[in-house]
Amino acid sequence: MPSYLIVLTFAWLAILVGGWLGWQLLRQNGRLLLRLEELEKRLDTLEFGVDDQPTGLALGTAAPAFDLSDLAGERKSLGQYRGKPVLLIFFNPACGFCRELLPILKQRGESRGQRTETDEPLLLMISTGGSEANRALFDQHKLDCPVLLQKGSEVAEVYNANGTPSGYLINTDGKIASELAMGAEALLALANGKSPIANGRSEIDPAHNGAAASGGVADENRFSSRSVARSKIKRDGLKAGTPAPQFRLSRLDGRGELALSELRGRQVLLVFSSPGCGPCNTLAPQLEKFHRERGDVQVIMISKGEPKENRAKVKEHGLTFPIVLQQQWEISRRYAMFATPIAYLIDEKGIISHDVAVGVEPILALMSSLAGRKEREPLLTV
Image (cartoon, rainbow, N blue to C red; front, side, top):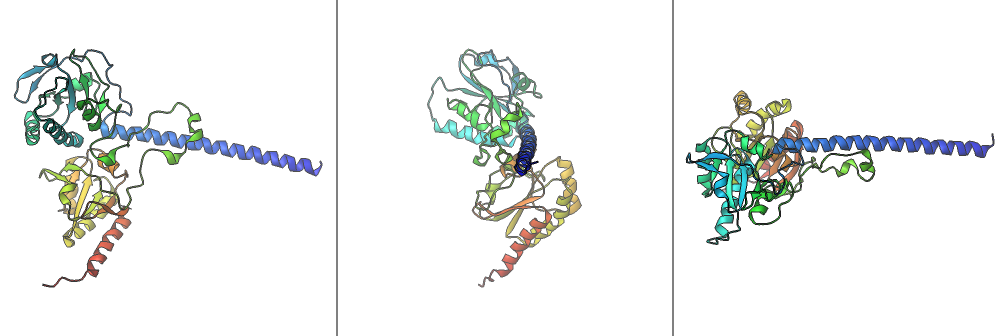
C-alpha cells in the first residue's frame, strides 16, 4: 500500500476516534448537567417546599371560598371582602422569610400615611399554628390586617400554594388577578401594584437574589452551547470581602431569636453543622474550647435537623455558645455552600474576612490563625 494511503488512513482514524471521544465527553457533560439541574430542583423543593415551577390557579378563575377563624376567634369568609382588591398571603410563623416580611409590610403601610386609594389591596393573611403564637408575632410588628388560621394547610392546598410566603392578588369580583407569587419580593410587588416576578425565588436578603433553579431538560441537544461551569447553583462559598448575608433564626435554647445584625461590632466565627455529621461532632469540642478561651470572637453555630437531636449533641459535648436552627438549607444557600462542617469569619463590620473554611482541619487552622493573631497583639496598659 502506498505510504500516502497509510497516512490518509491513520488521519481518518484519528478524526473518527477524536470525534467519538468528543461525543462521549459531550454526552457525559450532558448527563452531569442533568444531574446538577435535578439537584437544583430538589434544593428549591427542600428550601421552599415547592418544585421549581409551581402551578398556581389560572388567571380569571373564581378564588376558592373559605371560612376561617381570626385571631379573636371570630369566623371570617373571603366573601366578606368582595368589592375590594385583596392580597391573599399564605404565612407560617415558623418560616424565617415570613417573619422578615412583616416589618417590610408594616413600613410600607406607614410610608403611605393616611392615603386611602381604593385600588390598594387589603392584606389578608392565612396562617398556620396556634392563635397565641400568631397574635404575639403580629402584635410585635404592629401589623394591622386580618389574620385567619387554617388548621393545617387545607386552604393553601386548594390554592396550590405549597410554600410560604406566597399568595395571590384577588380582584374586586373575587377572581384570581395574578399568578401565584412565591417569595417576599413577588408579594411586595403585588402589594405595590407592580407586576410580580413570575414565580420569584428572591427573598428579603439581597444575597439570595438570583438563586432560582432552572427547570427540566427536554433533550441532550441543549448542552451543545452549555457547560457544567454554567450551572446556576453557587456552591463554592462566598469570598473574603463579601458582606455576610443576614439571617434571623430561632435559638436552640429557647431564648428567642438571634440575628447576625445584633453582633455587629464583634468578630463572628459562623459554623454550619449538622447533628448527624461525624466531622461536625469531632469539631464540636474544639469549638467549645475556642469559645471559652476567645471571648473577643463570638462563635455561632447554624445547625439543621430536629431540635431534640441537636439538644442531645449540645449535652454530649457541653456546648455553651449560641446555636440556631435553619429549617432545611435556606441559610446555607445564602452562604453558597451545601456542606457541613464549614465556617466563615465575619469581621466587626459584617464583612466576610476569610474565604470559607471547609472541613475540620481548615476550620481548626482558621481558629489557630485567630489565636496566633491574638498572641501577637500588644498588651494594653492603663
